[in-house]
Amino acid sequence: MADDIEARLARELPGYARRVVSALEAEGFEAWVVGGWVRDALLGRPGHDVDVTTSAPWRETARVLRSAGIEVHETGTAHGTVTAVVDGRPVETTTYRVEGAYSDRRHPDEVRFVTDVREDLARRDFTVNAMAFHPERGLLDPFGGQGDLARRVIRAVGEPRRRFEEDALRVLRAVRFACRLDASIEPATQRGLLECAHELGQIASERIGQEVDGILATGRAAWALRHEFAVMASAIPELAPMEGFDQRSPYHAHDVLEHTARVCAGVEEFTGGMASQALRWAALLHDVAKPECWSEDVSGRGHFFGHPGAGARTAKRVMGRLAIPGEVARAACALVSLHDFEIRATAPSMRRMLSELERLAPGQARELAFALLDLKRSDAVAKAPACMGYAVELDQMTRVLRAELAAGAVWRVRDLAVGGADVIRDRGIEPGPGVGMVLAQLLAVVMAGELPNDRDAELAWLRW
Ligand code: ATP
Ligand code: MG
Image (cartoon, rainbow, N blue to C red; front, side):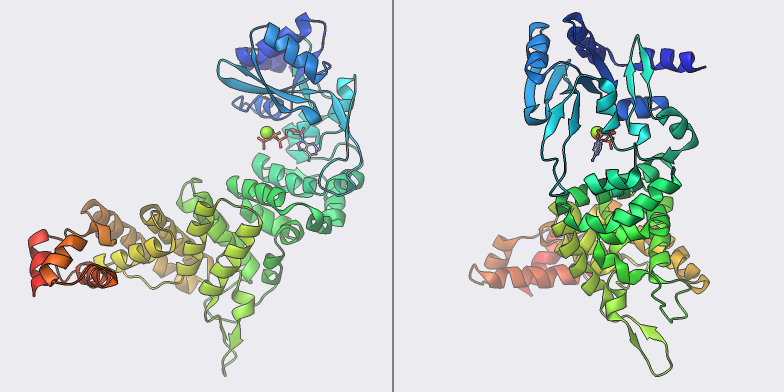
C-alpha cells in the first residue's frame, strides 16, 4: 500500500524537480523534495510548487546546479536558499537548517546549517508539512505526517507550546492549514495554540495579513470564526466585540459573530466557492462596527445606525495595517460601506448601485456589483427567517443587473455619448469645473432613465 503511494508520487514528481535533485546527488550531496508538494501530492493534488532541501551548502548548490546548466538565483542565501529555474519553473532549494531563538518573535536570530535531513524536518511547523520525498528512497516521515494527513489532523512537530512560543505566526498557520485541509486541530496543539494566541500581537502585521488572507482564500473562514475565534480575534482585535453581541432585533436571530460566520459561508455557497478575496474580506468585516454603533430605542429594540460607514472605516484601517493590496482593500471597503444600501430590482436602481461602487472603487464597479448582490443575499439568509424573502428579490436584481450591463448600462461620465467638448461648445461655458458639473447632471438624468444614452438626445439636452 505505502509502496503504491510512493510509486505514484515518484511518477507525479515533475521532471524539472527531479533534475535539481539528481544534479545535487550526482555530486555526492543528498537532496529531498519537502513541504507543500509532498503534502499536497499525498492528497492527490500534485500541482504545488516544489521545494527541495539538500545537504549542500548554498554556494555548492549554486555551483553544482549551474554546472549542470541550470539557472540559479541567489534569493535567500542568508537562510541557505537559492532558486533554481528549470524549464521556466522555479525550485527553491535550501540547505538543511535549523532555526535559532526567535527573541523578537518575528525572525529567527540565526539559522544553523545541519547535516541530517531529519533535523531540518524537525524544525518545521506541523507533521503534515514535515515530510520529505525522494523518487528512489521514498517517503521520509519521522513524525507521522502521512497518518495525520489521512485523518485530517493538524499536529505540531514537537512540544506545541514551545513551537508556538518560538514563532507565534504558527498559531495562525495552524488555523490556515486546518481550513485548507478541512482538518481538525489535535488537542495538545489546540491547547498550545490558545495559550500562545495573544503573542500574535508581537508578530509583524504584514505576516499576519498574509496568513489571514490565506485563511479567507480557503473559503472556510466560517470554520475559523466558529472554532478558532480566539486566534482570529488575536490576529484582528477589531473582531473581538462581535462575540456574544446580542443584537436585540427581530431581524437578527444570532449574535454578530455567528451572523458573520454565516455570511462568510454564504458568499462561498452563492459563488460556488469562487468568491473574490474582496468579497471574502467584506463578508468578514461587514458588521465589524455593529457593536460600536448599537443603540436601543424605547421599546428595547437594537439599532445600528451608521454601521456600514463606520465598518468601512474600520475595514480600511485593518486591511491597511495588514498590508492587503490596495485594490482588494478598496473593493472590500466599498462592499462593506454599501452592504445595507437600498436597492430594488429596477434598471435605475442597478445603475445607481454601479455608480456608487464606481465612486468608492474606481474601475471595479462591474465585478463588485455582482459581489455586492452576493453579499446582500448572504446577509439576508444569515439574519432571521423573516429576511429570506429578500433573498428571492435579490435573484431578480441579479437578472436585472445582467440585462442592464448587456444593454450597455451607463454609470460613469465617460459612458455618456457626449463629452466635455460638447458641453463647452453647446452650453457655451468656459473650460473648468463647470463642465464636469454639467456632465454629472446629464449622467444623473440618463441614469434615472429620463433620457436615452444617445448623442442627439444628449446634445438636445445640452442646448435646451
Ligand atoms: P503553501 O501552499 O501555503 O505555501 P507550504 O507548505 O508551501 O504551503 P510555506 O509557508 O510556503 O507553506 O512554507 C513551506 C514549508 O516551510 C512548510 O511546509 C513548512 O514545512 C515550513 N515552514 C514555513 N513556515 C514555517 C514556520 N513559520 N515555522 C515552521 N515551519 C515553517
Ligand atoms: Mg509555499
